[in-house]
Length: 329
Ligand SMILES: Nc1nc2c(ncn2[C@@H]2O[C@H](COP(=O)(O)OP(=O)(O)OP(=O)(O)O)[C@@H](O)[C@H]2O)c(=O)[nH]1
Image 1 (spheres, helix red, strand yellow):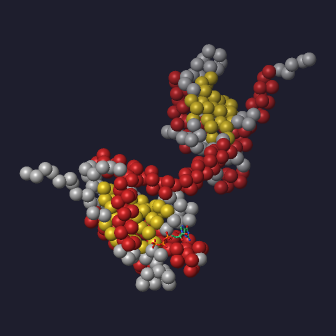
Image 2 (image 1 turned 60 degrees about the horizontal axis):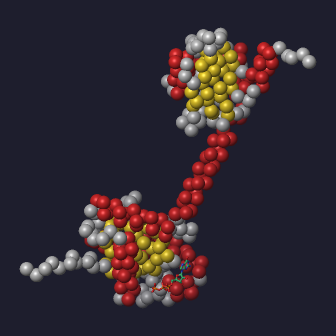
Image 3 (image 1 turned 90 degrees about the vertical axis):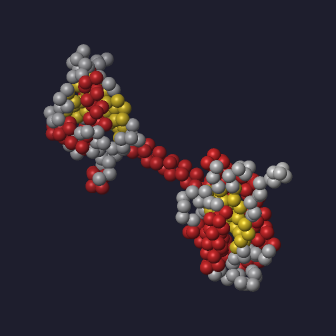
């Protein structure tokens, strides 16, 4: 069987290959420009050949592509330009419609020194381009899905605020931070009063609506990024206030309590106010106290329980533990 001559065979491979192939000489003049390049740039080979690559595509000047080409010609280094860092340096478009939209294809670029003619290192440089738009959009989708899963893992499905899992992680982190900085950390436990009769009377769906409105009202008052409102349980919320002393925490509790009253959500089977109210327990971890999340949560919970017992619709602050009395003089 007769073998085809290698040169025409290589030429037809070059024209058929699904990748852009450019060869430039030591003066960056284009000496090879395959069909894929013509198709995806709109610039035919007869126009590109002989031109300085950086005159044809001035935007490549000063960027990573130019640096890679110079390294290849001067030092014979190969480079792979990551599509993550260099998304679309060449003006390449998947189709004419994409040109109209100015939507470039995502590119993987390899720059390789060519010893051509044989033995003349640094005389030419091969630039290979491939379309990684599909992989890039899959990667983007995966990133978005991962972010969505992360948000779902740490946020409450009904109210959209942080969930118990996020709270547990945050309180551990903040207690450790307070200990490290010898700082203070306050915690509010907030519970909607008479929520069982609310549900029983207005129905579970309206109960859900009430939880959404109350959580949004509480969240709107927290301005500092380090403060966290979380849904602690059914109709119980927790607010973590890093660096807040007992007075600041009490002021915040008063503001949150008042904000819920302002909502004026009718509750025919609640307390005498006949509207939705909350009870709040406040506790603060002071410098020198044992930095144990469970102790701080326990103190805020006990204060909340005291507020409920005292008649609800009020705030009770836990009394900081007094330091142990020293020996009598
Ligand atoms: N609609 C709705 N109700 C919930 C949800 N989670 C918990 N609950 C209800 O919240 C109510 C809590 O009732 P209790 O713990 O008895 O407390 P309460 O009636 O608020 O009484 P006090 O807290 O003592 O004022 C129960 O009826 C739960 O079913 C929820 O996601 N949606």
